[in-house]
Image (cartoon, rainbow, N blue to C red; front, side):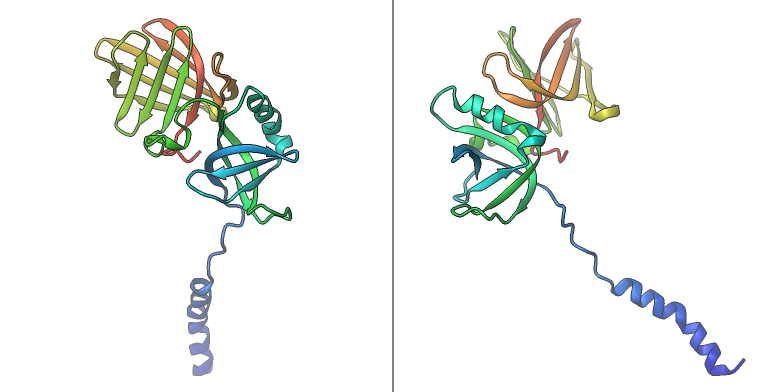
Length: 223
């Protein structure tokens, strides 16, 4: 074989590798964002004003989430802001007077009560579950969980997490004489007292007692 041809064939893999590494990764056009803010109803459409911002986003894709019905029910309860914790895809909007559109993929929660935009612990929270009659709450972070039950001092415990099929998960702890198991499942859940809507149902088994409630993922969990 002619020497020049041998050299050309030898360089072909090099050219291919240069072409491969010179290609720029494409941006993820379907990236979804999680936003918290206040919801309002204007001319039959829901608008979100994100926390600490002045822009207003029109909410789209109501049919998949049912947010229009749920938000209308909560707004009808009386005056005051309606806090929303949502995930969706941001885009431009054709509607005048708004700054964009949020096409929803998930409603984490809607609530009239609570800290809302002023929750300083939200970004550090992995999961928060709570229930009524009797009142209880459980906050999960990277260092452990804190259980609050009516009439008792807060209890900090380590925990183990088990991922289960269909988006369910199990948290368990056995320390300080306590046996705790929390089961969480992706299911629309309404608080029996406040009417707040959350995206997870919760069942807490504490020393043989079964307590039920609702839950949501905090800002430290990107689910």
